[in-house]
Length: 123
Image 1 (cartoon, rainbow, N blue to C red):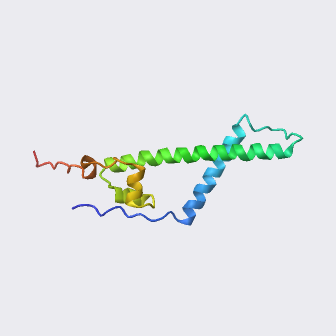
Image 2 (cartoon, rainbow, N blue to C red; image 1 turned 90 degrees about the horizontal axis):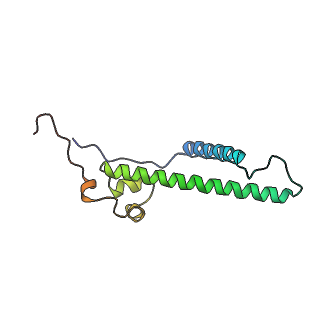
Image 3 (cartoon, helix red, strand yellow; image 1 turned 30 degrees about the horizontal axis):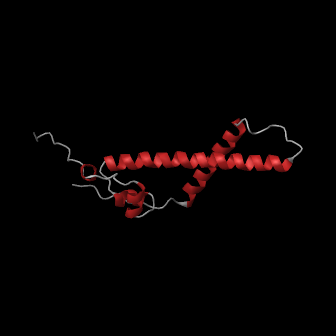
């Protein structure tokens, strides 16, 4: 009997809050380890604030890139396991067309419907 399609729900507020806190904690840790962050404030506090804000922005851009790469890997894994564009789109709160535009050619005839698993009595 086939399994029901994957049902997705938008991330709840608690999950979004937790993820935001984790990313902020990671950002602070990376900023502390950066050679661009000086321990001693300079006479030009405005320059320090600008450098700090730009470094934070740069780190967050890296986090976004890493998340995008992980999404790509997950989309490929989902397609390889038989998910179609509609399911992948729903998992990302986007349309089927949006998923298809993001990953053109991801779903092929061979990935859209994986072969049934052999049963012990089949040859």
